[in-house]
Image 1 (cartoon, protein in one colour):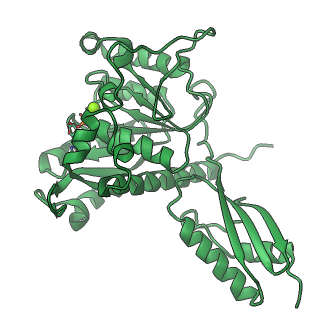
Image 2 (image 1 turned 60 degrees about the vertical axis):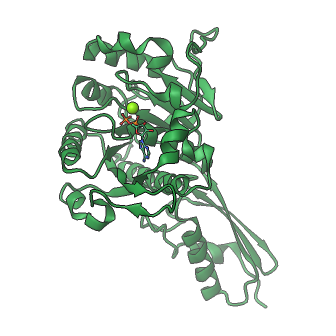
Image 3 (image 1 turned 30 degrees about the vertical axis):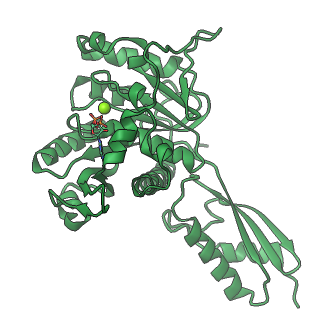
Length: 363
Ligand SMILES: Nc1ncnc2c1ncn2[C@@H]1O[C@H](COP(=O)(O)OP(=O)(O)O)[C@@H](O)[C@H]1O
Ligand SMILES: [Mg+2]
């Protein structure tokens, strides 16, 4: 039997494409190592995110391609590792060291579930193996303290280098204006002052190395939002909306704001998209929308990233200090959050790959 060579495998891998980036694994630099052990082939593949939704598909494609070309191949093992690539720096001064991507979660108005989604998204990304932090920038209604069960009065410590140490919950660094000042104090501040405070936050907080920092933006499309998205290099924004028509007008405003500040929009999450019956878990679509009516989002050029029904345990878990993805990881809602996290991570990988392509060639 003819011996299998690494060169042969590399040539075959040039025909296997990453389904999302549209380029082959060799060109993308995703093939880290090839080991050949008799008739068996072991491949180490580096993904652009640990939360890659396409692991199974890539494995199948690799197996098919190798088996198609080398019928006498034995076992084919594919190991995955991830290296989250950072977006193109907007400039050296406004990069936050150690943080590869900032994902902003925004909405046109409050009460649509922005914080619930930011918290569960951050934890779901972490469950997928990413290093994640969460910043509650919603100074008007900081809610991370409650959602993560941080006792009132627990303050972040400052280390010997004068850096603010985030509060750790579920192995995740958390920061909220609510940890530093009373919520009442913040509301009387003016936009630019708030934005300045938030910038300091980002620069002085000792986040450590993070693949993703999830940013819970204040609701609305005012001053603070505009300044913030200019100060922080956001890799992508997730808009949260509800299916009611009124909320759609708010969605349109949020889209406009992110477009004005050139923050790439990853898509929309439709929250309270129907009602999950606590007895039979059948979802009733009270307001329509969702995947049954994608055209309303297509009109706005928005990708529907996920739909989350209104569900009792989600609210109870959030109020009790352990968001649903950690409280009940096997629940249908937790699974929806993980699928959402994978979709968002994949969209970020594509966006940063595209921004890399636009890099000027340096001589
Ligand atoms: N999908 C959902 N199912 C059940 N309750 C939800 C859901 N999304 C949000 N909530 C609840 O609705 C309230 C408002 O959500 P929150 O995340 O604080 O909104 P926002 O940050 O947009 O103001 C909270 O009590 C939260 O627990
Ligand atoms: Mg909130």
